[in-house]
Image (cartoon, rainbow, N blue to C red; front, side, top):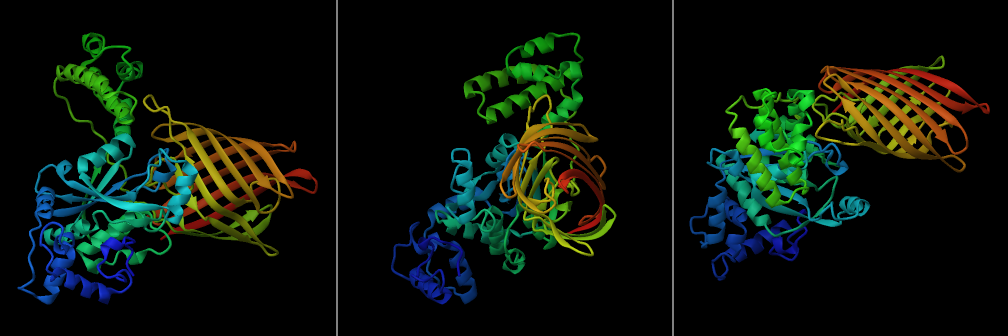
Length: 561
């Protein structure tokens, strides 16, 4: 059964579900007396045509003059293939999973002149209601469309506008395999299929294209109920077809690097340049500023200007005027070393999405056993190696405990999202989080359904970061209870194999009750897909008609696959 939902993709009326009828109808179309030009069946379906000619070993196949196809083929000039992974966007829930698309490399030396193949929902999330967009994306309310664009256009979109680092994985597909994939892409031009956020999404359809290039790969068979972009990169790597990789830092990463190079007393100058509070000439003329500092100030000013322009905050004419002024002054200062940005851990070397955890613990002198499972994807208690700092997005996290007398649900999360974006000179980011589901973090001594959404700020350095959040919340008992919580947290993540989390929360409820929550965690990454966690929880609970403290210590083994 085909996953293409467009009737124009098939010759037979039941072609989507009957391969035999579609084969026969395809051959009839190829051998028909239609005019053999750009509108002919042969020109519309070059992948079928090439495959059938090979399978039938036919020398007398009908020919067609496919001028438009040959024109685009010559322009794209397919030689090899690269899988591209734009990493997560710190402040966008829809982009926290990352994204994948393909680059078809040509004979040009510059990869920027190659073409990118992308698949996305035919919708603009910025113009539509966010809730409606999410719901329609889950139930197939949009068509998914393919696009063929110059690679530099995709870099502008993901690396510059959306502040996302880019990872490129060069594949060992041959020129002929890449050509086979291009033929299939041509056939998909103008067709549509329903887009599903979790399954038939951007990454799933990139796997289809790779299988069109080399059918023996069978990459899609690894996925059943969800297709996470980073997971597809893992699968492609495990298939043994990644031969090298390359890292392209985002505008955000570059600007954060400049913040470490510019003296604190000058850090406001690049922003002042873009806001025209000072001129580029005044930087050059200031004899008290070291020449290297002048270079950093002007270079970062140009980067920040481009970033603001990509956000639509500066008009084109104004942007070009400022760009010319700053680059002209920078050129007068001579050549210096290129910006030295350390390549971060490769995302494909981070943990997998599906997590199983087992462990033992002690709650107020009682021994407990723990068992939990989470289908996706990553939380702040996991090792952040290979993941974007300060981000969490997980679905359907389930944890149960068992004592001598009781089997209890500790947590049953529907969805939890956290974005702790550290504020800096260039980025005045806010932090936020939301969670929906059942847990034991409320006053009741049983699993309780609750919802919270909060916001605040975070600051950090190379050692770690701190954050402050205010969380309005409510939970259900015999009646709804509303409240508000204030949290202060610390996360230390400098060291590759160690992960330290501490958070203190004070809550006030509309029934007059107060509650203090403290949790502390130390995680040790013992391999790519395993971690040992020691966790302490302090909770105030309403028991025997009074507020009492409850302390729990757990030792957990987390395994990812």
